[in-house]
Length: 114
Image (cartoon, rainbow, N blue to C red):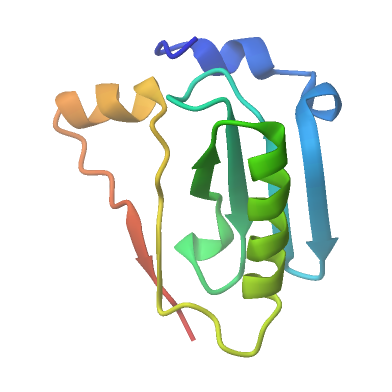
């Protein structure tokens, strides 16, 4: 269900939708089922070096199995010594498209902050 308010249906049930979560220090990698995207699963990350430590949706998936593989990849990526120079937010949430249509400039690529 990819509609502008699809995210409201996800409130309060994160544990039921959770595929996997890694949390260590300032790093969070969270992969779960969503209903506001073009694909049913996504991995979001929080890291002190990107987006002022706010969420960045880094990958979307069609199956729970793909989501688990992607989750593991992002944990490895974000716990390595060589972090990516940039991260692109790949979210397809309708609310983002709505904001863009209203002229709100949403920067969706984040350069690594040192």
